[in-house]
Image (cartoon, rainbow, N blue to C red):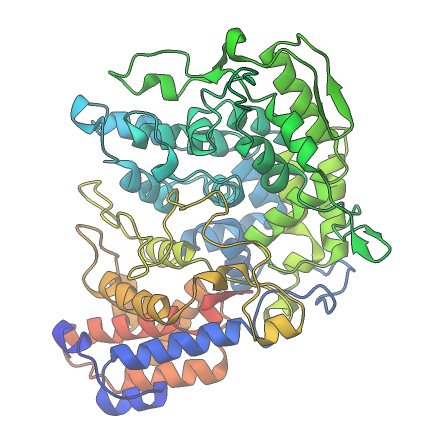
Length: 568
């Protein structure tokens, strides 16, 4: 079968029918993906449940098998490779985490842009270089745990490049922001809050850069955007929480965390913040923290969340007191812990799981609050994360982000860009992946952490499946079509290395087993594997082209399978 034949639509609507036609018709593959996402949104293979948790709290005996190592890497990296699976098996989970903590940071996005010549006047009014910088680091960076945690932070400490409108060099402004997340991924959450709050891209995205004190003559009031989102999305959330993340109730109703008056009081803190230079001939000022202009800063008292900052307190001191107040709030530990668990492991963690991670947030064992290393280790070594029995549970896991599906393929099979172009570009269009790193359209991200597909088994079970907010008829079909092209012909000069797979292609069972291990952590069901095998066996193995097509088919059907689309 030729690549052109692979692209032709046809009628079969099930895997079994592929064997008869020896091709992956668009409609059929879309049907498989729709079914996969439907399966991912019901009780059979969706995000984890808060009332029916598997496994129990008792810590299991960890088994660093190839399958458990691959499953671990699905939670801790942008995708498993044969080498990283072997490394996890050698070190064990905990020591691998320690090794990752000790790795030096990959080249920063900012330095990548400079090294590749993007800091020239001709790029002052475009976004050139941002996407290849992102894809290059996510796919090739050796500090994979940092990359995965940094991307998780970007999913809820959201800035999108389209909103980083600072007068030029938008790619550098966004790179500087993501570098803050990556640099602080293993640091302290309080330091991270300080650095995002003084970052130029955040100041632009949430409209408090140039924010001025109230004007009694005109009636103008300080912009409240950052004050609100800092509380709602980045620190304490909308309702008061117990230490395990469950809601506190008053007469059966949730208790609001803050009021409009708290937002107005907090907004007074975020006045007077500006870039430290008016020089727009280079992007350099976007990398430096914003400064506070005293004449624009609110000098009156600022009251919020039971805290009053005295009149005539400087802008810097007001910022520090505000962030200290939020960092000391009882909500921040369970709120942030749940967000990170959702991004790395499971959409519906149990209260006990959240409570254990929140305890690590409160105290890393040495009396330090907000230690990201302790939080990350608690998330990834918890009994609910590590017991392989969770892979067959109907109440554990998360739908795999489209970006992670692409990077999972790219890393597993050594995708490379010889010209360093990484031409995936902006994949946020619904006709591609409907998601692209650093390109969120709003501060609420590509999907909400509390999203539940309406009229679904997930809704009936009172569960959430955030990533399914991206799923619709167009996006699921487009994902399959896009990945078919990526697998078989690449994008730009990006190509995978299928040498090992081609050597296994004559024996379909061996080929599928290898793909299953690396991509899906061995979680393809017997039925799914049998269906894929039937399709692959329907393709001749007589010529190099035939062998290539057997590989393409096995990869595409795995990437479209429920077991891959749902990370367990």
